[in-house]
Image 1 (cartoon, rainbow, N blue to C red):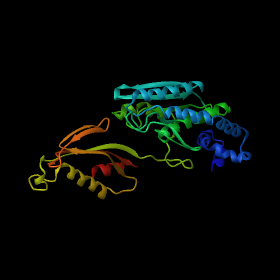
Image 2 (image 1 turned 90 degrees about the vertical axis):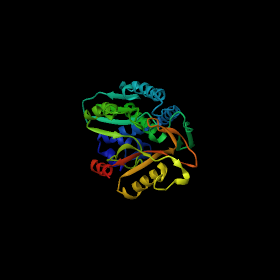
Image 3 (image 1 turned 120 degrees about the horizontal axis):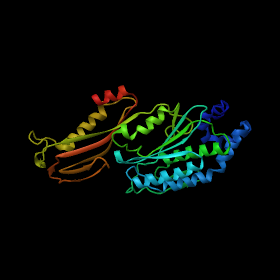
Image 4 (image 1 turned 180 degrees about the horizontal axis):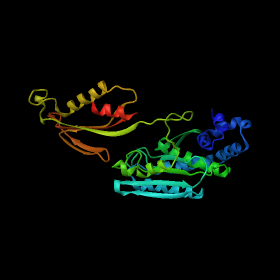
Length: 325
């Protein structure tokens, strides 16, 4: 498949295949001269790319760690400056996020390309998972290695290999590294405004977050929204639970509702994860940072329970159907 892609000689598709060129080197006799040069540059830059990945993984850039997101962004600004790309950091103070990094090469031929990654991870500063580690010679672990600091490095070093091999197209190439992909600033109309504008200026957009592995490309992506269920019950002594006056309490009622989700919202491509659930007699929940504190007693029926989760759907019709139900 990779050889077929390269023989089409469409430089856009060559960007897709660059990540597998090291493997393709086994079949070097089938490559053109320029493709051989690209393979050589990929192999020559491998150790440097791995070190760059480790450096950025070891910088905590949880979405709400604004300093960390900016620090990772600065590393990419320096790297893309060396490639001759124009760099633009776009602050996102208005939506309470660190900002986005856009890097652009101007060009007039071929397809206008938008290559998308993100600087933030789900692992905030208080996460115990903070350090890059090589598990063996071909496998690494660390916060954001897969989602998606590895993909960011692929974009950078693919473009670097193409440039060093004299094969980079004379085309408009925009690299968009978003600073709040894991937890978008609100409203999304503002936090995604620059990405939408870049998309309108492009012919093709490629996302580099791992989804289906190296041998396939994902051509559809489900929409994602968050939802929150807040249930209020009657606080009472536990000896009266399940009575007509007291009822089941907020925790049991929340469990009943969530179980109905589980039993009745069964549909292909539709998922609705419960990320956090917190309930008791006194609940303080910070929805922005998805954390909270709770207190209660085993002999008191809890009055408040909050469940916070996400829902994903493939089409607008599917989403509307799920929300309505």
